[in-house]
Image 1 (cartoon, rainbow, N blue to C red):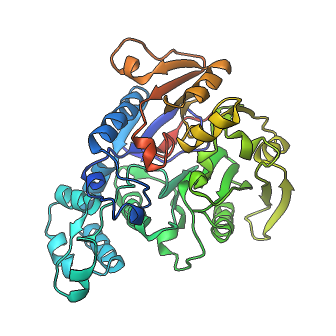
Image 2 (image 1 turned 60 degrees about the vertical axis):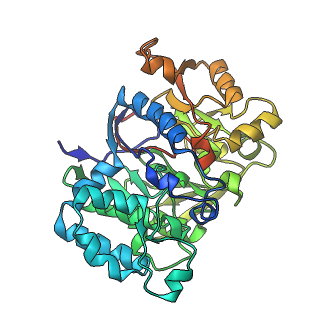
Length: 416
């Protein structure tokens, strides 16, 4: 059955979502190579898989859940796609000697190898002395499916990744969205893999589709102002988005993306990290409006924060404090992805239960709190109506630097 890309909000009832269950690529990291792939530490695969199983299990109760690996396997069954993708990856990692060997692999084995890593041929002194044992390195960030591809209304944005370690993910996802027979869209707004300009970077954790005509973008460590300008013009030229709110956030490890400090959880509510969203030092925001097809450039107005900018555009959003009222708990829980929630419907969200002060703040805001374990074991059920927050175990997954929104790539939602 065909899947039509349709995503015009952050909170519409979820229809289809892509996830990636962590695999051997996590265990193919070492302490010496962790920093190269943007990790502070190595993770335990059994623990990470157990926690991710809860995420996937909850989502399967409300939507169609598709594995990234399955989509990749299916698209690699097309000979021209397989050959073109292999050549592109081997060019990226300067290992043309592997092209013939990889092309001969059957699709499922090839998909596994492209994600988990392909060993190098030691046929030169340079390769002998290189610290990595891989020609095409493992992709341990793959379970953060959000970052390399974004769906906006009925079109696709392929990320222009800030670090070389994640470029391969964008190439794999571009092949999927361009060639998979089940995926139907109106085309690409922007293809970051075709971008030769290193100043142009765009990642999905910085892009929130708030309304059909309104997108919020983080100007962050991973998404550059040059990338934002390029992306806004590309989207505005095709419509229906006419308005953008750009939030300038600190370029730090704790705030690599906007969704680490701000996520929508209901029509009129968000979870926000107070120091940067509602505090006296909150991040300034810029409303950029494009008239017509964006040919005349943007009309820009500055606001003291994202909530103020949203209010000016007719969206009054109530902030729920990540970490609750205490600044000490706010800082600790933001670091542990306490603001990074994924909505599978209006007021129906998924997040990490170890952020207990954030969960308490959600309860105070009228969310019924449900433990994912109780839900999956049949001890409770999702209510048909009302606000609900499902908490999954995530102590291991959060050490990878992301939360439930990071680990989900929605393809289709109902209109709100």
